[in-house]
Image 1 (tube, one colour):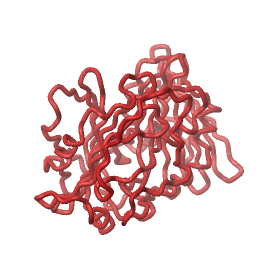
Image 2: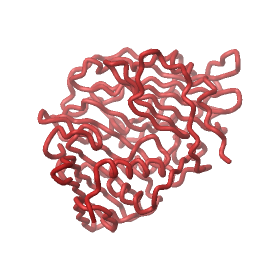
Image 3: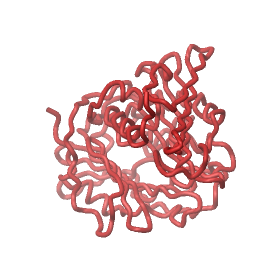
Length: 400
């Protein structure tokens, strides 16, 4: 079988992203192989609420209860001194409580001495939208070139799939080792031909009950990008140590087994013309969750939007939030540091519209160690995010 061209491999990853229904493109070779086997389906799954396993108690909390495996000390590996940004919080009833960031949990588990130059990822906590997987992406630097690290955590009840059972293209080596608990650990290496110097090493831990953890290290700062180093930064041994950390089970227990009320649709969310002039859209996704990476020439911001119908728990969570004249309720947090990431911050606006739709807009400053933007507020302000969240143009079409 011929080698898989780089752009085809990336396209397969994007197919899997559409099938899992999230804004993140999972950097998991096994998932890409599964996507190729299942064919080129374009599915969109709507995010929905009401899963107690995915939401910590939401009523009457002033701060999220963080799973112990996600709690961080905020230092990270070889943390560079970064500005401590002031956090402009609204009163308790309007503030979004602290959440646990998977990027922070990954940062705590990295080898010492690494710089985190960029990061992004999902959150868990009382205000976070429920999902069936958690993810993080960190660009690391050991002084020998930047390297993308991606980590994915999947719910135990999604069903175990053996990573090495499918290998649709050449250049991928996969070695699978049974574990005493009945699970498996697979080590995968992809090395393109001479014309394609892109490489990655991935480790996937699949437990006996189906919990799956993937950790992938590239020799580039982005998937399929120009290599910054001959080989991926993290070795198979380091990735194995990261992927098999028992703390991931606590995180997986917070995830949904199946996304409820999901539907397949190719309908795109209409981006309103509310972004400041001069911003360039570097990349974007469409669907029930939309993500866009924007730049003004010097800085970048990751803009993420989630929308769905509010259930009783969400209505209770917004019960004491400030109410605007049109009966819209708002909770927010401005310029919140992401612990352990050496500089990433986020601003979040969560609104409950009069029609019962909940819209959450997040702006992430992904900059980390060595960047003059580390610790700065995201490029989009709280007022700009509020305007976007209230704009009806973001509404996702109802499922058929």
